[in-house]
Length: 162
Image 1 (cartoon, rainbow, N blue to C red):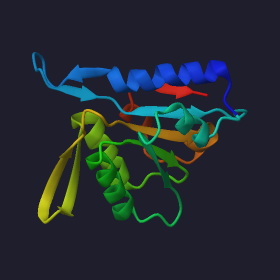
Image 2: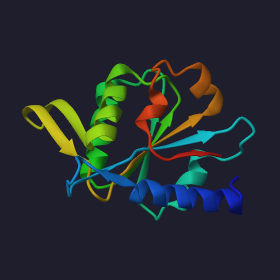
Image 3: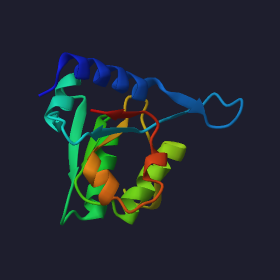
Image 4: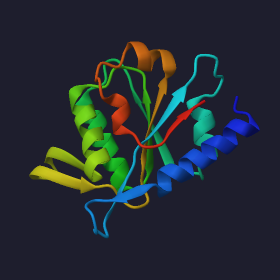
């Protein structure tokens, strides 16, 4: 259950993720948009569904990343959602694999997903649409105990603890 105060914080956070950007290089007109991270604190009663309820209808899709998840399929789902100009909310329930971390780094650093053997191309660069953003949701305990990538937090711009 989300409180009015948490909803207000969440709305501000989502607006920040939508707006916060920086130039690719000094003097560049092209912008890089940040990825967002939402951390559910131990006592939190907020759910992924609560977060989705704050978005306009049909603007966000939830992708659960959990055991038995085939990374290539997951990454292809991400690409399809970005092509549909959706926001992606990744509910991270398992340590992110190497390929997912690479895609998140590419999105964070260049706003591009780099896909292999996709759409008939050996290497396909999918630019993050202006209407799309990627936000990862993770439990505090899971973040502290299970995430193996040492620079995981560095991938994200705005971070919200709920």
